[in-house]
Length: 203
Image 1 (cartoon, rainbow, N blue to C red):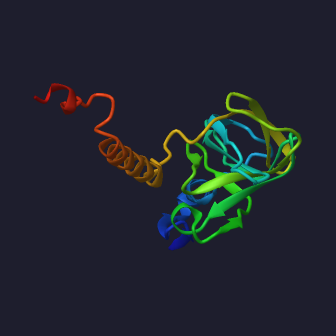
Image 2 (image 1 turned 180 degrees about the vertical axis):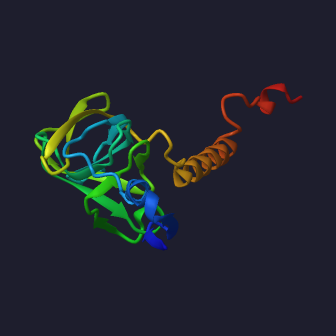
């Protein structure tokens, strides 16, 4: 007589004999069990953390980083805060570069051995109402909350502009237009400083 034991993780079927039932159960349960999330921040580390300065007239700054889980257990990230701001939240951008708005990002898991990126074209940490003004080069502390114990992971982020920002096309166009207008003005004024005065050499 044989007994059929199965688990759903995909769907894996294992057929075992009565004599190997105990061993089969152990193997199947081990194969079907999932890693239990760590109660804290475990092996989570943050890298390349930076904060983009607020746009003119705005009281919001945005932070970006890469989270890597170097531990053996998954880590659940439940929230974010900073004592240098009134409020901080995780946000998910909708559409290219957030053109369709943003939505609050629910708690998320960084799997063991995996990473999670927050980049300007995807996800961000919105930092509202800074307690003071910040300039490029200043440091900001961002604190992540993790696991059922609400453990904290402090991250030092530097204020800087987006190094991968697209060039300002409108600025280039305006510059070219200014150059053309200057050439026209120089021509009307006699060709500019480098032009020769033909009247002095004429006979």
